[in-house]
Image 1 (tube, rainbow over the protein chains, first blue to last red):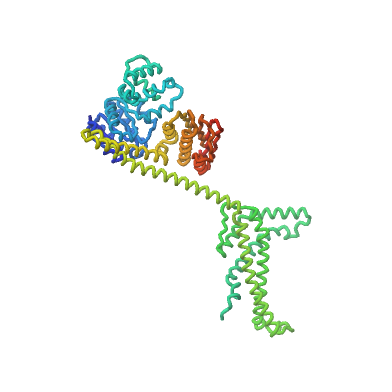
Image 2 (cartoon, chains in turn purple, orange):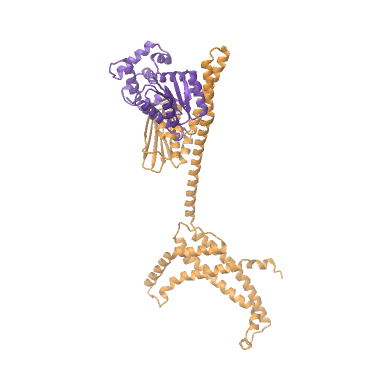
Length: 214
Length: 400
């Protein structure tokens, strides 16, 4: 799969290229600013774009705005945003539309190469990857809603679900069996009063409600 | 001919003092003349109307006070280079006091001194006069040898005294002028406080800017390099699967340490001045702290627009330090943070349901907080009865 990288720090960009290549992506373009990345996406039509949030010229949220443009114009392109810190609004902006093929991670996660590669593949494959810190910070804002009915364990499960993990991934993360995870998920879906439909769709709804954007 | 120093000394700068006094006499006479105006043509005789006339004339002088003061200040500057700051005080009782009391007295002294100069000058040069005057105008029984010699001596002594007096009066006048025409002690203190406040604000801002610069440098430099190193080590770990077990362990260890170094550096940088605070303001930065706090934190931030960076930084560190204290000492089950702006005051309130008994004088970091709050003229108060709850309230002035 073709990939485009937009990161203004040269060191990190070199690292990202290496990681993406190790993960089997073909890095067709690497840029250091938000305008160049849009041109590169236009030209190469990559399957995945990895963007830094803060880039020249303004060093504010150029990356987020570029990501929103990419999501709108090329909906089939997966977007993974890297940020120095968590800003819920970015996550909310990014997740307010279609949540397929979206990721939002802290920059320092890149150092956890194996997990980062997992996240890259998940996003490129149409899944989501949210930084645990993003998830818990979003959670902080939700008071007195159906989420309060969840047990701490169910919350853990939902957090991992929101960060884009599969049942197997959640089971691994919490060191429990997959069937236990499935049981927790059923309980979560029931407590959140989600309509009985196909399981995947309900998962997405649960996550959206969890993030306060659904 | 060399004149001995003790004799010469009073005459050093005497000319300047005389000119200074002469102009002073002129100005003062002008001022006093105003007071005498009602009596130029007979004037009032009844006590009450006299009083009224004086009051009116004093009022007129009061109105002229700024002009008089300006003239006097110019006089001090022109002859003695004494700068008496007059900016921002067009009128004061102290200045009027100078024009009505100290000034006239000194002017009177000045006038007498000028007379003394003239008389002594004439006496000292009596021989010239005797020589120049026509014989028939000479005083008949004046002994032109002994008496004239006495007169000359007295004249010289008079000149000496006049020089000394001129300098003394000029000195007294300068002192009185500086004390009365310049700013008062209270004014000076007020001005000083203003300057100190301003310079302190400058220092606080500069320290803040310096923290931001260090944060930026660390982020762009060491942090990026560490991430790059950790990425390389992580890649080695992920791809070099066929290395011997020991080598893999070394790589694994190095990778872990690199990640720990990144985490430590992130914490350090956050402690300096978090980038999120600079970029996105208090709400975003505080939700980051709340998220990292290992107990439930309710967060309410109500700000229409962003306060000054220094105020934001203080508010941020107040919450950060207060929550750290809650975690360390309060044994609380939850904490609440409320930040809102009412009028020109930013209110920061951190509450917890812990055991209370927090001592702001102890080494709990609360003392440091109070200092930091005071540096921006804020107030810091803590209520922490034994048994709880603890409420930390901070009010920071911020221009609306």
